Image (cartoon, rainbow, N blue to C red; front, top):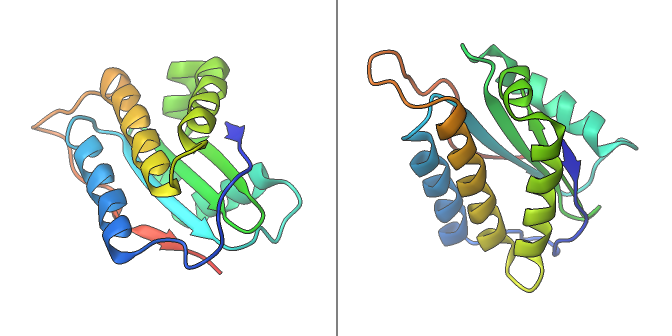
Length: 153
């Protein structure tokens, strides 16, 4: 899990940018049984962004995947917070160092770029790891979670 501050004001994304993010999710999930979701809200109503990400993760029923291999990319734009929250299946496979490095890589990608590009690159990175740890199986794989971006308040 990791936290990252940055980001711009609303409106957060154009329709084209939203489609790029959704396409990135669908593309990454083609090669893994893992699942990814992106949740974006203006403000985090809670003190700890990790607690908020966990609440969103469970509210979206991301803990119900067969292999417990879902990853949430949580962003509070105004509060400039970002958290990667992985379920126990993927978390146990990659460990704490992976999440710390993933956040560091995201910081490097977001600096000097627009947020949409950073999110797309982050999705690809997480997708590559999910593919390695939870490869796609044409017999058993199904899309367990929606691929759309979830926008909170």
